[in-house]
Length: 158
Image 1 (cartoon, rainbow, N blue to C red):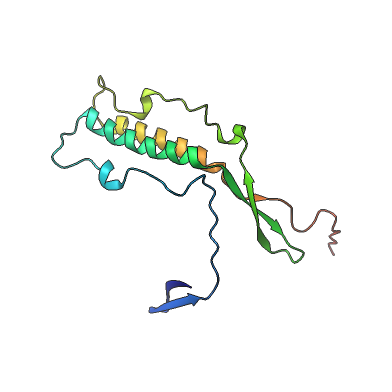
Image 2 (image 1 turned 60 degrees about the horizontal axis):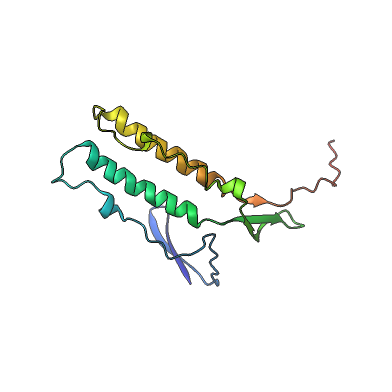
């Protein structure tokens, strides 16, 4: 059973769905050993130095790369005869799609020793990780195996 809380005209409502849930994973394993947010956070006792933030950034990057290495499939859907989009299954990613060998580990992911630590340096590293993560996740968009309406359908306009 799935229970969801929602609001309807300032009144709280619990919705109960008595459906069988069959979760499907696109990962090689669901046993994910990631750094937690508590392990990544910069402690208040630590000074705002380049190596402190580089340590946190490297943990984030390790999490992103670990997730990338475990993704092997994406979800696929198909339209039925009524035009409803339904779950079809999973498709394996090709080597070209996932690009596991093309990661360019550059100094732009970290705060470097000779840089004046400021917003632009901090934002550069965050932006670099964000763009890498969005590029990786863009591969996982749902693949629709057919179109609706079917291409063989004649559409008349009056």
